[in-house]
Image (cartoon, rainbow, N blue to C red):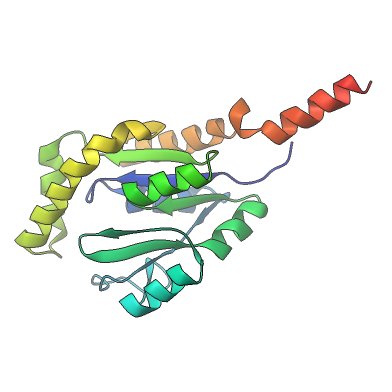
Length: 206
């Protein structure tokens, strides 16, 4: 069977721990690659250009849209976010399972263009935990926190569009759950159409 990687989209409420979960996967297993998104938002303390995000201007971002260099893009709380195309396909062709951390608009764009993509949604066990985590960051104003919570309420309307729901309560358990889900998803018949077609033809030709 061809060992092409699986495009895995990870979405979830701001503060649910998406980034922490993916860092856990990357540090524990060597078959993952993290796609670094572009954004027009300012870096948070400790964030590095090219590691967490490519931080670019609004003008630069819009030029990338025009040039077709993104596989998806969306606006979230007043800023652009998008996924560069070339890196993603290079890693998939090399057999890596590519993780994309993007919000729901971008996730649904990808699912429409790439039906074989796996969509995972990360949430906290309840709304109060989400509020506590957002406030615990200490990096955002009350106004921004309020906007993120309002956005979370909107995003909750689209959770059913995702294939799996991951409740991030215990970090290590969630990392293992994500890994198991991704690896099993690669074996779904619907994601192995080329393999099925080949074995069917070979059998007919015997």
